Image (tube, rainbow, N blue to C red; front, side):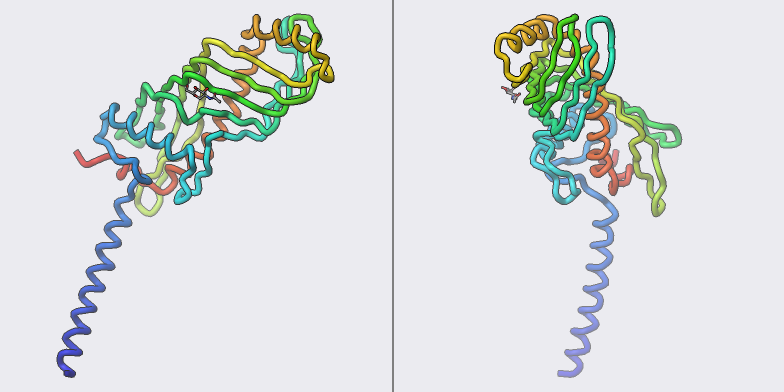
Length: 260
Ligand SMILES: *[C@@H]1O[C@H](CO)[C@@H](O)[C@H](O)[C@H]1NC(C)=O
């Protein structure tokens, strides 16, 4: 009995050592959150597929990476203040801003991953979104095309056929002998086919005044859109930078791609 006991215990010890080693190996090769899989370096088609899966998962949130749901994507505040040009002199404050469909575009491009980490990396991704809707509380005061506009209520901005280009600059940082990507900056540029604005409660709810200013605004949508879009894009870029940093934080760059 005794000898069997001893045999058993040393066998167990060996098994435990083996398990400890193998689980350490699993920790070393970090995976993306399921169902996102790895691609071969330079396989853009595969990366686009994974990018779509990442958007799907981000829509509901990725709890294991502490990433909240970004459908809708929420930005606390977006402010456009002062005289922009002769046609636009307004203060517009949007709060509790929600972007609906931000996770629903079709990705068309993912380029720029390099093997050389001694230089900063510039990753360019592009996508097309058939319809993006921004809803917020708003406060506006000023002039658009020399017409006064004033009010406080709910704003809905509907953007059709939004083409977005993200330029993300990153650098590598060494931790525990491994390289991790750190995001320095995200630049977002967009083009839209049409922007439609609706605001409730303009001029204290005066229906005739509201309808006429909204009509002018929508017939001349570029007047507002050209100035507001870069401000919106910067706010979204800051938000996405936080989200993406969580995604890349604990994945060493050498684990991004399948072995060749
Ligand atoms: C979201 O996108 C779908 C498909 O393009 C569109 O039908 C829907 O109106 C969009 N929803 C919002 C709130 O923009």
